[in-house]
Length: 125
Image (cartoon, rainbow, N blue to C red; front, side, top):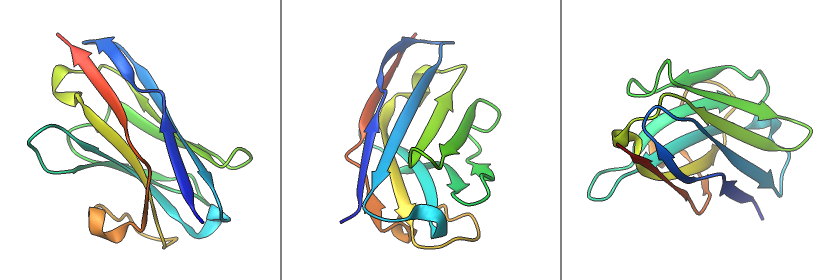
């Protein structure tokens, strides 16, 4: 049973930073690609970024590129989303997800098999 548990969300002022964590358990994740998505009220789920678990290489969506960074800690089976220069439009529930592939940059939510429960990020202006 794969479990993904996000943490680290909260309320932050515009321009501030937050770091989200996604603790993964239940499998060896070296063959997986881990993604971050977000969903604001009334909007579709949006791709934030993805990291290759084995190489650590990452790819980002246009709206966050240059402000957000994804890293993983193999020893802890944890993926992090460092969010800097936050804007009110970054307000959303943030989800981590695991895709059963070890190459490429899946950016569609349909490509991911396992999902966490989400963590709320609110950025005040």
